[in-house]
Image (cartoon, rainbow, N blue to C red):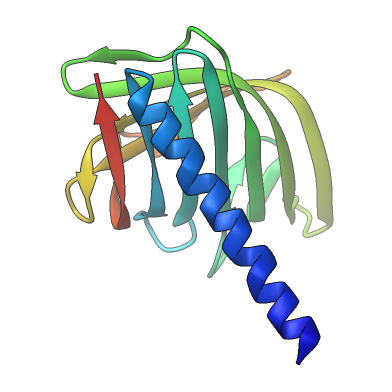
Length: 173
């Protein structure tokens, strides 16, 4: 019983810290924050969370490919991809209802090559840009762009911005 109580307290404190940091970002001026499940074709749905202000922030996107995954660089089929990194100070911008920010991420990928071999890799110092519109499920949108060494630019989704299936994105200009 003590362990479960302690675990609940740790989780509650972590959530409180995240909410407090979001409140500070809101009070400090322009910001974009949010998260949720980003809709996409079967195999490319992702979960994301971020908080960006003029002074920086954090970004996290997890793509767990189901039913075959998706092609990415040397992988014919990605089963898991984790993109995380700080938001560069001064990179937050707004234009036409779209908020964008950039930074440098670490990307962990697990997938299969064209020959069927499982290939796991960690790519560091990968430039990324995140673009989003505000709202809740069905209204907010997100797009992640990365520039991979020896491969070049890659966008998720490749054809615009994907809607949030659940969650919320808040933009304060």
